[in-house]
Length: 286
View 1: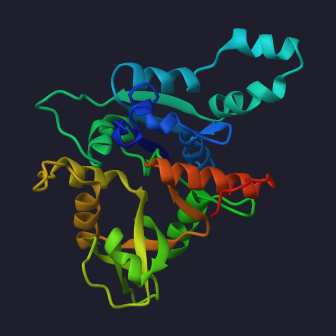
View 2 (view 1 turned 120 degrees about the vertical axis):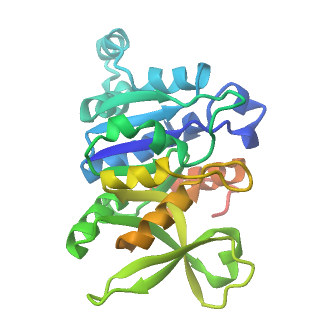
């Protein structure tokens, strides 16, 4: 299994700081949000991970964070600070990283489907995780939701699986909704993916959280995409097209989902991570 992590977004909701620090590198406590996605992929079994970055400084920040710096490691070790460099060392010892730049010119494609298209050669004939680099799942136990996703796909015997968080039906209009159908074996499979439905009558809804495990053949569904009315190439369109031809398992996650693509979402995630570690967060509510 390989993994493709999308981390090329401009992060305009974080401007002005988003001009200098790419949003995937913004911190949740002492680690960038990207590090949480990487840890989830590694726990699922991915040891080769492609990070799709923006060109220029934004991509350089990510490459620098994920590259081994022996001088810095020696400097920390000489002062007894191994625990400071340890989390970074753990990442580059657990996985091999490939960095792919997503062009940002006037005629270049853009949207959530582009990372999978650019990573087609990297994926090759391997199953692959497709993950957003600017959100995370926080667990109260020691588990990892992408590992659970992979195990659930194996148990169900389906070629692919998509992770889903559960929200009240009254909030469905804010999300992309995964509509399930039940297979003869009793598994919940993706029947349709609807973006922000204005009316939703069920008490709860499965929402798309940009985490899927797909076979290599799914890449051609990304490559055949036409842009949406907005001009974007949307991963949800490719996933929905694949699900029309193949069984795609819906797997509800255990972790608490946080969209870190906005300042409020990042703050909420940091507060939740602090509470999970037993740290006091005065004046900040969940």
